[in-house]
Length: 167
Image (tube, rainbow, N blue to C red; front, side, top):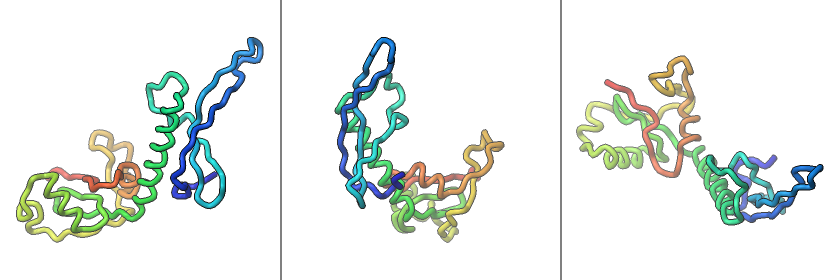
């Protein structure tokens, strides 16, 4: 199996026809998105679990191509999330970003707070990737999750609030 980060960025679509009922000889045609690996001249199929929910029929050629592109974007975000850090900016909020400066800048724009109101009396610090928080207050029985898992799942290339504590 090819690992995330080993894709070249090339996407293609293959047309397949398969027999779905040997008795009636019914055949179905569909398109399968394929992505090429970096290290070998190997194309990896993206399976049906990548289809958007609500898609009742097999994807068209254009839809399959978009599924391939979407897969590569998600793979790239996941790969880049390894370099993302989580910063506790104040007593309430922790933000995912590449640098403390970019976390603070995004936070001020996102909240509309002044730097004095946002960061006064608190020295921002990087949080360990192994730090655990409850996923939701309503579902404490689900247990805690590492902030790195939150970053891997939600990182889309821009900072975001990883967790917030009511004060």
